[in-house]
Length: 512
Image (tube, rainbow, N blue to C red; front, side, top):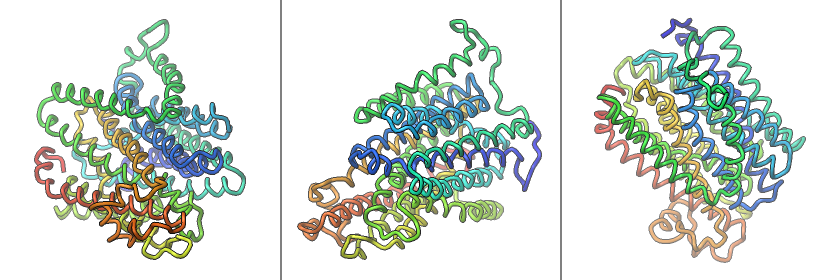
């Protein structure tokens, strides 16, 4: 471990990674805020088709980090993976400004491949800045997480404004510029030597080993480019993506079993916890990621927005994280010193419970809908605040724990496994979003039986009361009924996670 200069109690390299990730997330969230609205308003896709493309894109964005982690562990190292991924993502954003099907699906594929190389490895880099057992680790990841959300807060505001005033393609171009700025910060960190010898090629001899006349490292770069058409086809034919989900599950389970058999205690029991946290995070993202799809259309169609458009509402969550990240970081440090800091298993349960509560608040907005089926923006703000607090309980802590629970040899791969929670989450988020586009609301599973009773209790709507009303009210019902049902289910799972937390802590074997 290289001795590192500290700034404000943390390694100097943290702040270079902070700004690199900030601008990379600026590009990602700027494009994400526009994508569903661009498809429904500019490309004239149906809601169902838009949710299918969005769900496939967002899930694959978090599937490829599994591959990117393996390539970084064995061939490229963290530095080369981050640089290659950043270049591909910048190209993807810029090509989105060209309105043809070839460039639309090709751009999404470039972003998928690039993110797979960039995302897991920059997070792994943060973990390598701290020694095992360093009490500053959770605080460092929370600060890093704030960088993600500064980008996530500013990007929808700027990119959506540019898109509205000058056109969609200018919004996408601005996102691409953000990606280039992120790469520049990372280069500056490398040039300043703030990372020491961290993140280099793990085996130079293997990297330069020839295969068909080329260095293996260059073959991997070429392979990344050649995989772009494949991912473009998967997004285009997203109705078949479930085959990828089954294949990914088979590969992940097989890899984890192999790692389990190749390591000794305490890592065996800790790998079980890795799988547990990944499952919890999959559920979290499946509900949370309505934000970029159905919640954006809900805001566009059924919320009386004040001071921002529907795309810009994507900045609310990140804005709250900016306000809360430092106080949370300080709180974890304060509680740790007094040995009162809840363990990670309890934090995860609380995060799920608060996420569900936030969606229940969204659903409650229907009680105050006006004659045009417009609900007060206050409910959107309060709901986002609650689920943001839940996010701070579970997501940055999960990132931190992966770097402690993982066997050192497989660190980047395990980080990639953790990011597949977003792959599964976005896949199911797309399925959940499609439930909000049901034309016959009486056929919705949330309109009948126990779920129908929950919907009526929370929203004041029932299928009996909704028959014969305007299309706008039926659309409102389709949104709030889904949010009410999944909100209550998520709260219940969060409570169960809290109850079983003592058993999970035992399996963590010394990691809190």
